Structure formats: C-alpha cells, structure tokens
Image (cartoon, rainbow, N blue to C red; front, top):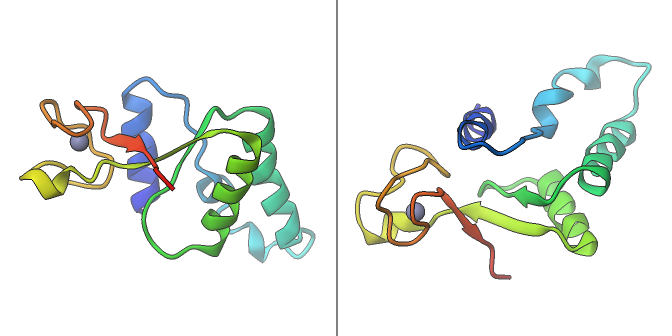
Length: 114
Ligand SMILES: [Zn+2]
C-alpha cells in the first residue's frame, strides 16, 4: 500500500503522521458504522491536529475532499517532489527522501501550488 509506505517515510523524517484509510481499513464491513462517520473522523484530524496534508497523486474523491477541507482550514498542502523531471530523483516512490535533490533539497515533498 503506497500510502502506508509514504506515511512511514515521512514519519522516519521526524514528522507526526496520520494515515486516514490505514486507520479505518475494513471498517466499512462493520454494519454498526456508517461511511460518513469515517469521513468525519478523518476531517477531525485535519481540524484538531494537522498542520499540513500530504496528497499522493491518483484518483481519490475522498482525498480530494480532504484537500478541499484542509484548504478551508488554511493548512499547508503538500505533494511528492516532482524531482523525477530533473533526473533519477524520486524513482523509488513518491515522497521518498533523496539527499541532493535540487527541487526539494531532500525533503521528498513540496508545497502544492494550486
Ligand atoms: Zn526532490
């Protein structure tokens, strides 16, 4: 699971990370819970805890909704470094920390300019 790898990579860099769908994986099978509850749970971490959101590329209406909410809250929106365009950087996985990358200077991520 790519999100899990990216989350651990960020954690290894010293950031505190909450990976929403990792936390509530499989909860949709519990008939006592509603999907809306999981979405509200994820939003609560953005509202009460987060300073930034890291968006991994790929189609995800849920992630798009979280980014929109994070923007409303004024959080930093981060995305994987696009450093692949300048050479061999970041081929391992999105967000991988590559010392010497001229784009992100080794962080593995950059501010999303939207
Ligand atoms: Zn980079």
